[in-house]
Figure 1 (cartoon, one colour):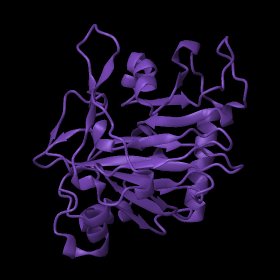
Figure 2: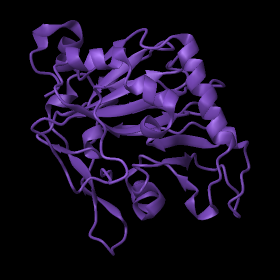
Figure 3: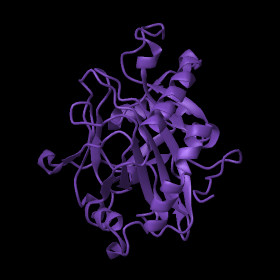
Figure 4: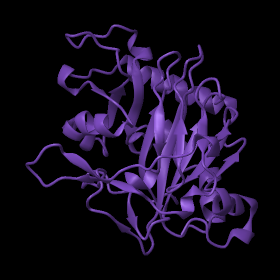
Length: 294
């Protein structure tokens, strides 16, 4: 389980204590630029049918309305699909902003189908971090490119990743959040409540029975958090934040003129772990969860 044997090294110690750790220099500036350039090419060629133009939200009620009814979202685990910011389409579903500036994120299988992203995901540095953390049989659950668009990049409300990526036992999921540009307080860096990963979770997003709507629902509610407990976690371009699956984190709207591009993916320790069949994300015949170690 992530966070055990904390005296082994600094990375382990900080995840055990705080639920996250910021590390510099995972990627070079050139590697960051190559990932961003490749994403620009993917976006330039995207062709999303009008009925699939789904806006992404972390607000409880909007999640049920948008993602909850969207087959496009719930079947995206083994595909590369596009999710948009609010207010980027007119009443006819046409773009009212340049499409490069319209996206919230692209996910959730970049690690499987895009060679540059696959290379970063399975890089010796990432594998080395996982081994330092004592992970024996880690697998890749999902991956995303997050845009945090200048001026319109939406707020991500306080949440725990285990709400969406639930395991038995808990404590087996870790986010790897790589800054492809400087992530600052001005452009919407992450904020954490240190130590909040030690209190369990208060809600779960689950699939509903087949043939019912919405396609997903929540058990429980996100609790109210004291804003004064959140600590900013700015990170330089090429740096990474390792995120325990139960630590509470959020990010503010990006009201600056600078984007905050990120490549992020989630790892699960598969040894002696049960992946919940109720999670929205499920392995498929086309894409079982691939092992991290290669």
